[in-house]
Image (cartoon, one colour):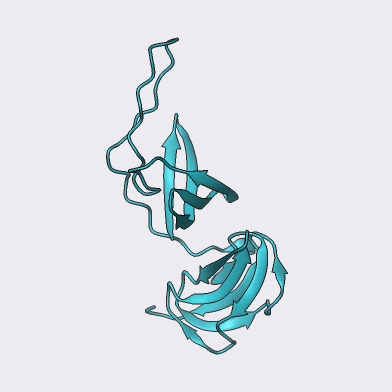
Length: 157
């Protein structure tokens, strides 16, 4: 869905919002999956206002911005230096492979359906080009970061 880089007390986190249902979201924080809840009136893209707490020991409060900074453009994942690799964002089971070798894809196309935590997830390619290699099949179990398929990047896509 969305990917953000956030900083809390000078520590940087990469957060990817995978799915949102009601007041719950499934997110990856630095590659680790979490189920999170957010307050009514908030959303994963715009957090609810922070409720002030009574004064206590002088600890620096984190600075909050009203609008989150624009996310940096997504860069294609290149595990092991493999350009155009589409990797599993979480462990799960392959429900469906939507492309085959030789198919043309555009950035953002859904190429694989992955079941994880009893939810169906669309795995999308970040690059455009021609599918060069498909490394999984329906029913395969995959680990986070495992290469599902490889797209040969075409010029001008």
